[in-house]
Image 1: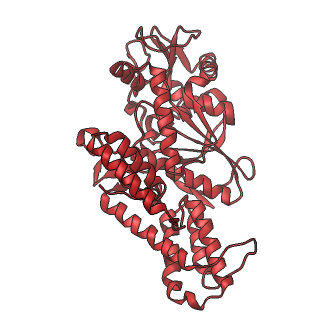
Image 2: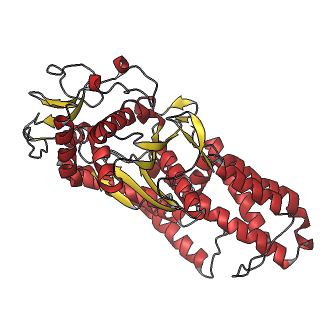
Length: 448
């Protein structure tokens, strides 16, 4: 299996540190607001990657951090009047709910930054002891001039480093030095005690402290969005390799491409910012998941109603074909000559840097070549095809089953529809929308 690594800018044979075991870390959200469809794109991609690795026989331990202390959280706390930690817990809960609706359930551990302050303090102290970090009147900083390889992941010059999520630069040795610890700034801000005064962690140090604690100084794969390569992932490499003296910190760096909306960057200022919750009011979760996987995870993806509608039709086409395979899959396995080339194409595509669009194309190749002749296929042939599609459904995280409506369900749906109409008439839109969203997650669609 070949996997592309941003570090080497090439595909490499996927050889892990410990045979058949994969330690995977993916940068999680900063929980100050609801997750948006860009988050959805990234986490669907990595959920599918984990599913495929496990299908291949790897034991995958997947950690995702939760940044629950940050400037954005503090600013939103001040705006809303909700204490910072209460705000963070609220949006952490909503984030996990959103991921569950998207069938993104492969994360083994959500690691909060605030639960790992001791590990953060320990890593900062060791960086100071080794001469890579220094204290000022407003914080502790990493001295990037002490790490000549800074920039090797992004191929960017150190002078380009923005002081991302940083505090005042007046006491730093170099304007590009980034914060490891931020001393108390405001009276109402959350702080923790440290050898350098009460304060809170810098953004970059959270991840390396967490991964070192669970994985050690070196591990197999690190993922995140393309926008995190510089400076965040660059800073992670700098911290971890400096403190451990071991390189590379991570062998495979995997990054998802940008998500645009109707050809434009998603932005609240452009009024095209879409949360996962808003999306699921109008579209089924599996439709969005299939849409995401119809583009390679490293490629940019353009979100539009037309593209979602196309994904909905494509998924429905597979489901109708699956329904034609009117057999039950048991413990016995069978081979089917007509299936063989398409099955090989699917797995060859997935082995080629998780190429889901090419793998999906193999499914439609199977449908095109066999649909009109299914009546002539033996039950064993149909069982082989159906078992393969069951594996595909599991890997992609979607269902090819057609929802069966039991007797009495129509009456129940009519009743629910009437209740929603009354709620809308009374302008109780939040509850009405929640009912519609929950029904859609069960496979029922309501259009007002």
